[in-house]
Image (cartoon, rainbow, N blue to C red; front, side, top):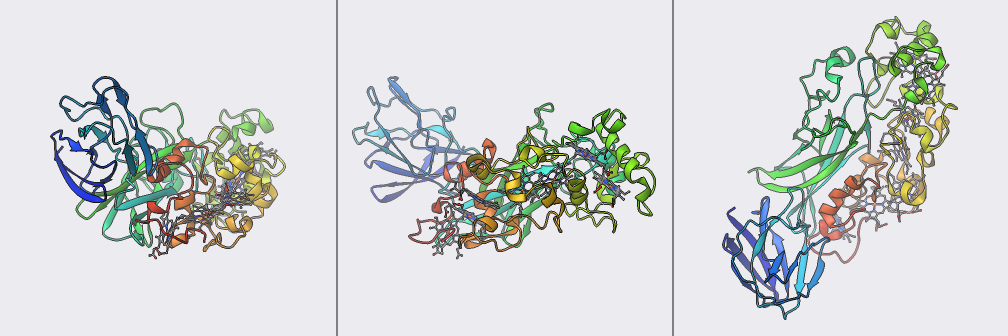
Length: 491
Ligand code: HEC
Ligand code: HEC
Ligand code: HEC
Ligand code: HEC
Ligand code: HEC
Ligand code: HEC
Ligand code: HEC
């Protein structure tokens, strides 16, 4: 415990109130109190209001749920507050960014400062000086469940962050701070994936346990990169420490920004989506195409050898079945891995989408044979939820995808369809584009395929932490200290 500083604004007067443990009555001469968390506040803060016990007649729990939500209380029973409050009481509500509590002036003349209010380490108080915007760049990362035979993609997740100092105007902060990430319920990957048994054969590097291809682990500092911070290549799996059985494709990262003295400036909880749901087994199980090796992966390699072995380029000869594990990108170029492939061999996207063109319907369910998937539901954005759009609405069908001249780097654009001025991307890729004030599109809208409001509840957490409700980051005062009278993201 210790000192906690509160600014209490009442009747226009700003009182700096330093509370030292003691339950001290505050006279309610004003009927509006705006509590502002200050930089001194760490994890636990004391608020002058919260749950109050009105002499046993009624217990009121205030649940501030949104920015500047106004709660008027009319207590029943005798509103006399007696007794000593012994902090810390059990937390009864979570501070959401910024709240105003109004009560009827007829209320008891004093309010006892009481219960402990736990500010979840994630809640970025709107009233705070800094806000942390974070997101995953792709909206979903897919990796193989089992690497003993083949690898399409390794565990490799990316997180992006922008830290904004609130003000008039707001400022994007890139220096003098550190930003770190961790996964409270996902602290290791070895044992959840056998990737580390095959890293040398697949990628030619012997990675330390739980370290991925870029040298990153499941926690660490992010790299400052121009106008943002990034953690690229986090070797994240879809299994919580607390549950190895049920997949959790929407892993929650805890991201914290600190100043040079180690004081927490802002934090948030951000989804890092990850899934192994590739349903190759829908068609490549034992018996299909006259092949039964006991595993889907070896069935696929056997089929590939049967069909192409005579064409394997020099330096890459021999049945794939004898050279396991196989990285598909050894021969098929993949921009996802920055792998050049072998010239003359089609890139992996082209090979996969052309071979399977006609084998799956040109619908979202068709794409979900290989992309995650009927259980993961990686497409969870507002356009699919509210406007019935599916993969093919934006990407076209298999024959369009297979003809993509530059897979991963040539993709649909928002401004292909949202043609009104103000929605233009300033980069060919959505994930690289910035809009209003240099803020990334994905900071306000979230990542592709998860454009807010998403149907995955975890995607909403960061927006609720920032503005009190789910959906596009819309509240100007998340970043601007005072409500601007004009302008805005797309004006
Ligand atoms: C909807 C059914 C279906 C699904 C799902 C499916 N495939 Fe196939 N796949 C096929 C068919 C049909 C063929 C062609 C078989 C033939 O030529 O006899 C094929 C062929 C292949 C080939 C051989 C290509 C060649 O010419 O060498 C590979 C490799 C392959 N699939 C990989 C995969 C992978 C990897 C997945 C999952 C990510 C997958 N497939 C999912 C139906 C499917
Ligand atoms: C040793 C090099 C090599 C590796 C490794 C390799 N492939 Fe191939 N693959 C080829 C060649 C060569 C072809 C024939 C290309 C052609 O028909 O022009 C081919 C064809 C294919 C096709 C059929 C393309 C079409 O249009 O008919 C698919 C699908 C495919 N590969 C998928 C995969 C997958 C999935 C992996 C990883 C499990 C993989 N390949 C690994 C060399 C390779
Ligand atoms: C048979 C499996 C399979 C099916 C079905 C499939 N994909 Fe893919 N797709 C893949 C694989 C494997 C990759 C990764 C290729 C790489 O690593 O470069 C991929 C990559 C992609 C990419 C990124 C690369 C690029 O070409 O830009 C897009 C976009 C894509 N798929 C869209 C679709 C859509 C839309 C559908 C449904 C119409 C679909 N896919 C159906 C296997 C499939
Ligand atoms: C293939 C066309 C297409 C593409 C590409 C597309 N959109 Fe949309 N989007 C629509 C349509 C159609 C709607 C339905 C309502 C409308 O017209 O605004 C919509 C709705 C939305 C909405 C909800 C608006 C509301 O009032 O509920 C948002 C937000 C949105 N799109 C953002 C984006 C972003 C960000 C991108 C790029 C990542 C994007 N869209 C790419 C066609 C598209
Ligand atoms: C509302 C439009 C829209 C829909 C619907 C949509 N996508 Fe995309 N997709 C995009 C855009 C835009 C990008 C490029 C993002 C960028 O530029 O950063 C993209 C990129 C991709 C990529 C490349 C990796 C990445 O995330 O950038 C894959 C793979 C992909 N989409 C697959 C799919 C699949 C599979 C579906 C259906 C389950 C689907 N998409 C539905 C708009 C859409
Ligand atoms: C500071 C936050 C912020 C940033 C940055 C931002 N947007 Fe928006 N965007 C919004 C808000 C809020 C709305 C809804 C109100 C509106 O339409 O102006 C919106 C609406 C949209 C819509 C409208 C959908 C519809 O049909 O109504 C599209 C498309 C869109 N944004 C695309 C983008 C793109 C592309 C970028 C990056 C170039 C971007 N946005 C950057 C906050 C933002
Ligand atoms: C995610 C943070 C964020 C949100 C939300 C946001 N802005 Fe901004 N805004 C900025 C940044 C950053 C700048 C750039 C300040 C500078 O010029 O350095 C800016 C600049 C501006 C400016 C021009 C500079 C100034 O302050 O005079 C106006 C006007 C503005 N915003 C209005 C709005 C309005 C209106 C809204 C809500 C509809 C809004 N903004 C929402 C971050 C945000």
